Length: 452
Image 1 (cartoon, one colour):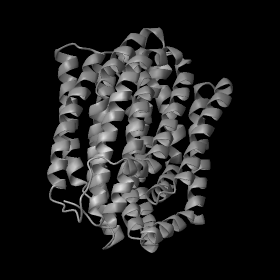
Image 2 (image 1 turned 90 degrees about the vertical axis):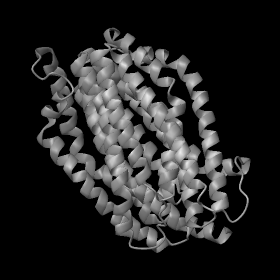
Image 3 (image 1 turned 90 degrees about the horizontal axis):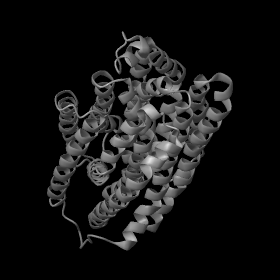
Image 4 (image 1 turned 120 degrees about the vertical axis):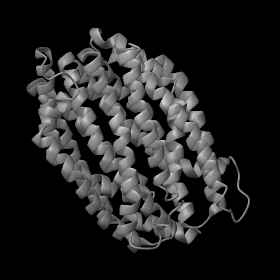
């Protein structure tokens, strides 16, 4: 099933498209959270800290895959919106082969750099070996991770958010079950958490690719298409490379922040590991809804309909606000209880870690509204290929976050690190919104239409 978002009510289309995507990311984040919950409750606090210390490094690889995915899906959406199905199929196959190659290269590189990165980040010695073990298994699943992401991204670009939802539900439930079995029954420790992810993601990636090929065979192209095109790769790269750089820059910034947190000991690492999982859960849900806005904008950019893109932004912003509000309410009302899910709240040696994680939530969550505005405006900029403005606003967020984390932490301790989040979000949000209002993206859409 595909959805043409160049026709019909923008609000209804966005809701219909966003809800399955939102449910998908909820399942995805729940099994990521399950990794930490099972590690913290069925192994120990150090295992939770080890998975948490590994998180920024795994996010580097995930961000590269996500950035490539974003760039590919924007181009595919534009061709789909313009009804250029031959170019669309060429873009799809070129993207798949390119991403597979990228996955293999990063697997080799990752095998050599993960341990030095952990040492460079001053990972506490009592969690270093578990963090190494987790990352070594994780890296070998990168090709499956990239393949899975590009397949679900292509489904989304074609207006199909139901199929990715089905894959996510199956993968998530299977992952949680395997986590529990490997850790509790097979006593595999942290490696069991990593192997569960590897197996579930690998199976789903292969099945997703098969289903995608079946769906594509039903879309008839108006002319011949290629399975790989250097010209198309260049076209996709115009969007993909800035997206990869943007996503990677976010992860590199998080690595610097993790390095600062590591300096405050394993309680800070464990508390941060739990809190950042909750934070990523919320932000990922908002970001996923914004991906639907981006797909809407890309299809209508392909059709050259600027007014419809504006309608998509207004309706999308309302949807994002509705999604953001429950997270703010629940997180602020029950911060300690939520952090306590990740480790035994009755154990005396966990109390400091829980308090540190709850403090992160109290400082950061009130500023989710700024994130909602930023990501909504970014969705329009990305969907219309306004990558320069998109990257500037995103880089500003990360640069400021890292700079203020270094400036404030000597004076306020780990609290100073938490304070850097709102500063970056507020300034970057203002920049993204200003770029949307200034309207350079409109000229890009107009120029693209004139060239067709």
